[in-house]
Structure formats: C-alpha cells, structure tokens
Amino acid sequence: MYPNETKHDNGPQMKKYILGVIVIVAGCLLLLSNTGFLPYELRHILFSWQMLLIGIGVISLFSSESRTPGTILILIGGIFILPRAFDLNFNVMHLFWPVILIGIGVLILTKRLPRRTFQSRGHLTNNQNLDEGFIHEENIFSGGKQRVMHQVFRGGHINCVFGGSEVDLTQATLADGISELEINTIFGGVTLIVPADWRIQLKMTSIMGGFADKRSYIKESPDPSKVLIIKGSTIFGGGEIKSY
Image (cartoon, helix red, strand yellow):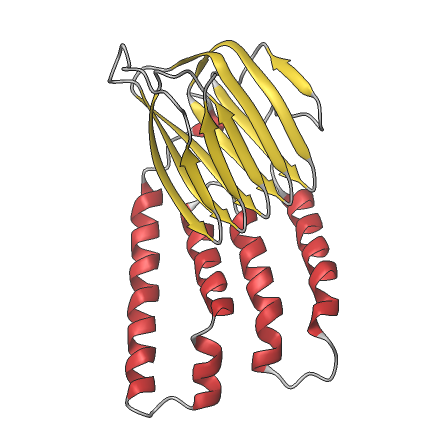
C-alpha cells in the first residue's frame, strides 16, 4: 500500500471520542444555562452557529486526513464570533478575507504534498497512472477536471475550498474489497462520474449543503464485495455522483 494512504484505523475512534466530549460539554453548558448559572452574555456566544462551525472544525481536525477543511471552519467561525465576544469599534467583516487568505497561505506552505498529484486547472486531463490507485487533489480558489483511464481505483482524497473538481472514473476498475475516498468541500463542489454498477456507500456530513448519488440507473454489481465508501464533509457546498 502507498505509504501516504495508510488506513487510519484510529480516525473513526478519535472522531467518536472528540464528538462525545463536545456533546458532554454542550450538555453541561445547557444545564448551567437552564439553571441560571450561565450569564446571558456567555450563553449568547456559546450557543451560536459560529460555535457550531468551530466545533465541527475541531472534530474535522482530529478525524480527517486533511486539516484544511477543519482549519477553514475554525477561522470562519472565529471571525464571525468576534463581534459577539468583544465590543469592537470596527466592522469585523473587514477581517474575513484577509484572515482566510492568510490561513490558506499558511496551509499551502506547511502542507506536505504527496509524491504526485493529478489535478488540472480548468481543462480535462487523462491520468494514465495513479499512485498505486490513489487520487490526491487539492483545489483552493481553483478547479480541476480529470479522467482516470484504465486504472484500478483504490480511493484517496479530494479537498475543494472555494473551488471545484470533476473526476471521471468510468474507465477505471474498482479495487477488490473496500476502498475509501475522502471528500471535503467548503464553498465548493465535487462531481464524480462512475460506472453504473459500482457499489457506493455515502458517509458524508453536510452543513448548508449536500452530497447525493444522482445516478439515474444503478446496475447490479457483478462483485458485491467491491465497495467504494465516500466519506468527508460538505460545508456551504456540495457534490454529486453521476453515471453516463
């Protein structure tokens, strides 16, 4: 197996622990609020959609192979919660794009890239080789469109932040057993074009967005043991699965 695609068996377990801790803390805070021990000013901050974004971002940092979506969510939630937490005498929205751009720049500089990435910028490319069947794509303020040709597809990851991706897998063969593809989109979208007989399981978390299997016709798989699991998150974005 390609070293960068080692299965993270602890990922779901860590996500469960972090989610459990956040739920317990939220329950304790709600108990304090309902009993009058939590000041209104603090309650107004803690129970807000901004804190929800920050909480989802924290969960994503610990459960995802990529830290980009979680970091972006924490930045967005943090920026919008500033007016609630502090009495600022300037428009906090003036900070939004500068902070987001700085954060994305830091992520680009510090991110360890895989040995190969098969992505394009607005035009179609034919990928004759994948890294042992894995795809790696990062689109930040950009778009990619590619076709995987005559390869055994094993999974990988696609991250789109203010960008999009279209991947044509109709000429690929799904690997034996269970394969995993992680997709994370923030203000972006992903379109997967797959054979009609692929077995696909969706395990996506969506907030103000969605990810759906929109194949008009799904044929029975000749090998039911071959399964592609698509996991990840869509925040203010979306994705779809299609077939010709």
